[in-house]
Structures are given as structure tokens and as C-alpha cells.
Length: 358
Image 1 (cartoon, rainbow, N blue to C red):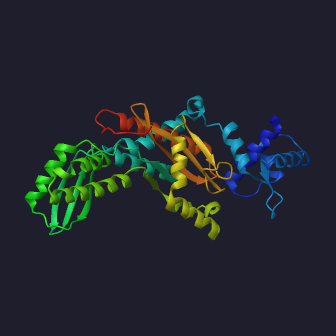
Image 2: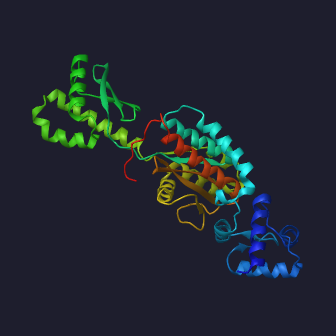
Image 3: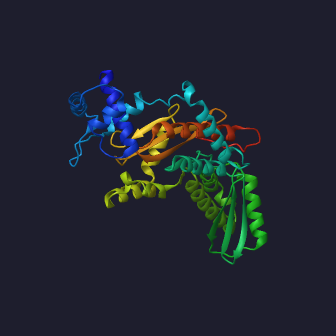
């Protein structure tokens, strides 16, 4: 593609992002800075359409970008990437960094709170949805406690190595006294603390005959409840600002689009897959719907960046929005948020996140 065609395609996409209307030759002539006749512009547009970079909606003489056009645009035409090589943006970037640090870095939060704050920050600054894949955490526990709620209802309290606490209610066939529950917790913690519940299950199979019947039933119930609690806690995706996407016409203009949008947030499978893929790559990644199989909606784009603890990648964060978004504004938001979150999680005094699998 020659420079003239690239310039016109870049102008067309930039105008479409701003205006949301098909772009005609008059607009291209005005904003491209090229001294071309309308006929020449129409010929170039026709070539770009043939190559699959733009399309003509039935109702208009203007053109709109295709997923392939957006892909070329974000890969080769954006001025905001990489950040370090854009001195003309330095004042804006300094201001943006200050905003993100103000929302994220100035608060003495634990890791989980920092991660949810990062999702809110991404949403607030981009005006779209912010998403953070929680770190994969070791599924071990530091200690458990049993608390009697009634004759056959017991509260299982699980404390993770990071100090996070989860509660589960266990229904039992037998009634346990407070003394028996203390005895059971002491046994559990002295024999199995630091293990995963799956490992405890294996141990209990071997040691089953050595335990009294009442204790073994309670232990098994605790293992099942603990295992289920840990499974729920792992591989979570935290999303902030889903409702903002309902105000984006490109993503919510028909019942079919709304249904697919709700599917993305309800099932989260495609999001998890996309975030997992981007956690194995360096730096900012841009996924364009209709061009990437990982994005289930053609008019949706996802911009992601990995974040880490002490130099090791533990998760991914990003912004979910329409393909018609101001990429040069959103990319720095994602990039800087990932860097600040990584620094906050790795900094002195921050609680360390146990990781596994990356």
C-alpha cells in the first residue's frame, strides 16, 4: 500500500472514531492534508475497499473501517505507541500517570483491593469497561477454624497464606461440641497447614482408619467445602463499568448485540481465554472483534497489558470497548495502569501474591 493510501485510510479511521458516521471523500479531502481531487480520493477508496480495509454501508456513500482496517491502523498507524518514544505526549502522560496513581497508588490496600481499584481506574479513565484477571493463587491454606452455629451447622473459616479469609457453612449428620471442634481444627492445622485441600483429601484416604468416625466425617466435609471455596476463588475476572458499554451504540443498538454483550460478561469464558493468552505476551496487546477469534463480538475491541509481582507476570488487565474507540488515548491508560499496579504489588510493605502456573 502506498503512502497516499495509508494516509487516507488513517484519516478515514480517525474521523470515523470521532464522528461515528460513514466518511465521504469531502471529509477526507478536508482532514487528510492531501491535495487530491474527489475523483482520485474515490479511486483510492475503491482500492482500499477491494483490499478489505473499508466497507460501504448500504445507506451511505461514505465508507467505514472493517476489522482488517482497524488491525492495520493499530499495528502501523498509531502515534501513541510505544509511550517512551512519544515526547510530544510527555506532559499528557505525566498528567495521566498522576491521575492513575491518585486513584490507585495512594492507598494502602491489600492485593485484592488494589486489583479491584485498578479495574475501577481503567473504567473511570477510559469510560468503557475495565477488566482485571486475578492472579492465579496457590490453593493452599494457612489455617482453618470451626465455629458451631447450631447442633448440625458449622462455620468453616479458611485463612489463605496471604491472610485472606473465606467462610463456608457445613451441614453435618452429627452434633459437635465446641471442644470437639477445637480438637478437630488443631488436628487439621498441625497435620495439613500449608497444603492444598486436594492434598489433604489424599492424606485422609490413607489416614482414614486412624481417625475416629465423628472426626473423619467432619474432616471430609471440611475438605470438600474448602476445595470448592478455593476453586471459586481462583481464575476470577473482575470487571468494572459493564453498564458503560450499554451506552455505546455500536455494542447495544439491537437486541442481538445486547444479548451477545451480556453473554460475554455472564460466562466470561472468552474473556478468560483472551486474558490468559495476553499474559504470555510482552506489553500492550490489542484484540479486534471480527479479526481475532478471541473477541466474540465484531464491534468490540479489547486492549490488554500484563502485570506482575517482582518481575514475574501474574495476571492481565485491560479495557473492553467498541472497535470505534480512541486507541491513542486508551492504550496509555492500560499501559500505565499495568506498570503502576505491578509497582504497587511489588513495593516494600505490599502483601505478596502467591502465584502458580505462570
